[in-house]
Amino acid sequence: MTMQKKLAVQSLQWTGQALKVLDQRQLPGKLAYDEYTDASGVAEAIASMRVRGAPAIGIAAAYGVVLSAMQHCRGDGGSGWQQQVAADIERLAASRPTAVNLFWALQHMQEVLAGHPKDPVAALLACAEQIHADDVAANYAMGELGADILADAQGVLTHCNAGALATGGYGTALGVIRSAYQRRPISVYAGETRPWLQGARLTVWELAQDGIAATLIADSAAAWLMKSGKIDWVVVGADRIAVNGDAANKIGTYSLAVLAKQHGVKLMVAAPMSTIDWNMETGDGIEIEQRSIAELLPEAYRDSNNPLVNAWNPVFDVTPAALIDAIVTERGVVLNPAGQGVRGLKHAD
Image (tube, rainbow, N blue to C red; front, side):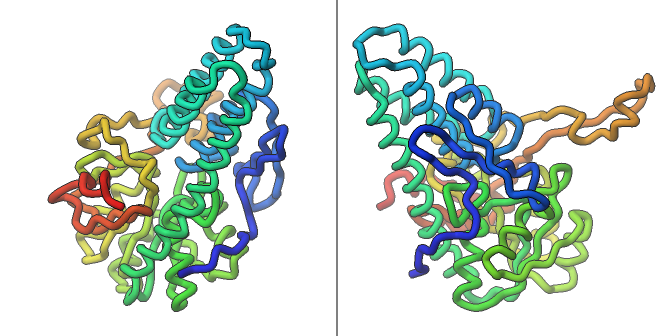
């Protein structure tokens, strides 16, 4: 079993009165934390991608509800604070549409609120801290299960950032890679992941903090890398998994899945159970977030009066279960999910 060590970097830190969020937009050049004392600030941190990654978004939102209750609830039995907290929960829910972990965490917090109608702060904080701790534990469990599958792999390619920065700690896809690397060093490649460059700015930096060597490639070099025979697996995270095994992840994952199938490379999706949307039968129903064209289109085009140049900026795509070889969760592994989806995990021990 992999030892749970303290990682070199943590994306979220609870101080007792505030949530400290590592501003991932400034990495790797600057390690800077922003401190939030209300839910609206946390919602803005999620929307602006200061904090990102489906599990981390859910954890941050849970702490956001705690901050809302701390701000509005005075413990006097009055009901006015309940509407204010409800409004903050709606604000948090609207911050990012694709990551199901956000809504999963908020649902848990709402259930706690319903059970503690007078003074819920302590119970909400306990729930948020449990969500945070459970995510870290789940990541370590996934790491071991995924490493078992990668036992004979010589090289892996990962996309976006699904590590400690995107979770409560250790990571999903990078958790698998970390655990595999601890057993036996393997070659790790990371795509740059345009347009936000989470691979170039975050993944290779995060791995370097833990002493793991990684090679950065341009996104467009992935097919040639696969053809070279240097990788056996593509290992990615997910923001939402449908019941049939279709998985939404950072834009470009679907492309890698298609390329992997062509070149005989296998694809692993590592994600906690909270990423599975049991109300979503197939990936066709997953809402794909469209972000501002300003994140993609050069300023010269945005400032001109030329209507012929525009941009399309979806930040997720959906990989069909038929292109996925393994889905790894803390509760177990589904191999070749195209046949049965992830239904067997629902009641697994």
